[in-house]
Length: 261
Image 1 (tube, one colour):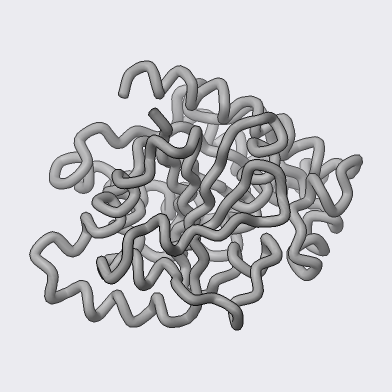
Image 2: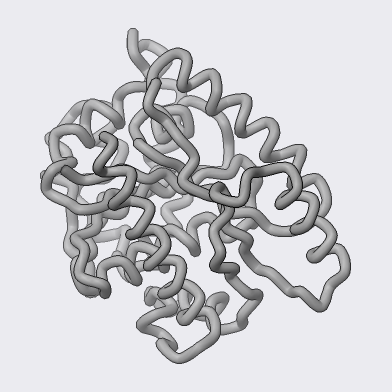
């Protein structure tokens, strides 16, 4: 049985999509079959992994609205063991349209359960909000990963997210748990980065924070414009090495979690 992991943070600019893309590719390179689900109307995970949005027949919108079987929207990428359910701007329409559904936050869950067993790991790239689409991402997954940039107000944002997670656990997804917090775009030369990181570490149990830290790295920033994950764009860069290490941690935690599901 596979495990579904949502990459979540309602704050934008924290390398959420970057983490979803690069983690998917790095896990695929380690021999695991991965499905990346783009749940952001911006579709950055779709273009960032080399898929041309203009050529798409079906997208996450069609899946979440229940108009097709999820398998019909799956596209194989050019990267080992990685497929994607892509997204375009049309997904934004679902925020309003889902309001008419009785179980509007469970649409993605119903869809992914149909194909969960076909993959080792399904990674959902959630949009930066806590609206209906993001709640679909939280309701559908077994675990969440929270990418966090070490800057002021990070703790406030995570507190808000954790409150939402608590509500989702009480209503639609009792088994939901945090797999871990991962520090992204980290520059330890900056005092504020070190201070915020220490504050976060003092507020969370050690086992909820990944040991791997993602550095601020120009190659990571360049890779999406080429439609390539960093582990393919520049496999020897510091960014690529970091995501390879993070993938190993995620696989280990996913295997442990899978035994409990």
